[in-house]
Length: 331
Ligand SMILES: NC(=O)C[C@H](N)C(=O)O
Image (tube, rainbow, N blue to C red):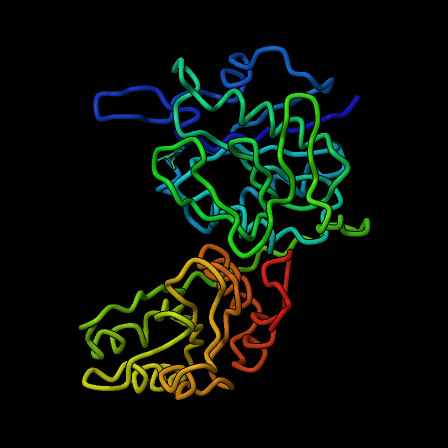
């Protein structure tokens, strides 16, 4: 029989109605007591790591989660983490970088509606996550609303619907049905490897979304505060250089030693800075290209990379190398 460890961290799934709205209150065993008969035979141990709304999630807490999994890795066949949906995609990406080459499933799930409510999606999501944690597959995944999403590829697209998450620029890994799991055949399970823990992070990372009228001087404020800046530029990776010259400010940041990552506000298909003058003017050798990673992966990846080096060349090389399927290599 498979042995699983379920870690809880809070989120709507564990929330009850309080005086000021929903607050995480339920503990690990409470959650399991709500789940009806599981159609998989396994033993589940539980541990509460924290009990927070995931809006309050911090990079330091990702480290706690990664350490908890690593410390228990040999004793269990699979892991489930219940988590709020607001920052779940950042956490699943962060764990994908901090715990590489896992040969066992690490499954993050949660819900849009608290587990004690009649219309809750929590029971299905937790049951599915438990089933998926019994599979013979390695890596970090989000299981939600019947879909399995690669940990580095998820975004929260919807605030209220059951299907809160989408897989961006990457197919769903699998879909969950009552009696079977349908794997996407184009995705191959990685060869069995030894898990590696690396939790060094530099949290001095900011995301700036460009918009018409954004002030160039704003970027001066970032210079001494951050070591990495992720620019959500326009379209295929375009940065304005007329009237309000943002491009010049990005160069100043780079010359100051800040790593600048160019990504796009468009959710799908990634940046392709070679198309327009407004993209070609950016020095492609000096900025980090995000290719088709999403912001939820870029942020923890940049923290993780800057935790190891601030050498601009190395940062660029590591950021542009696919880890845990975060970049599709068609560039
Ligand atoms: N559905 C949810 O879990 C949202 C909640 N605010 C959280 O992220 O913890």
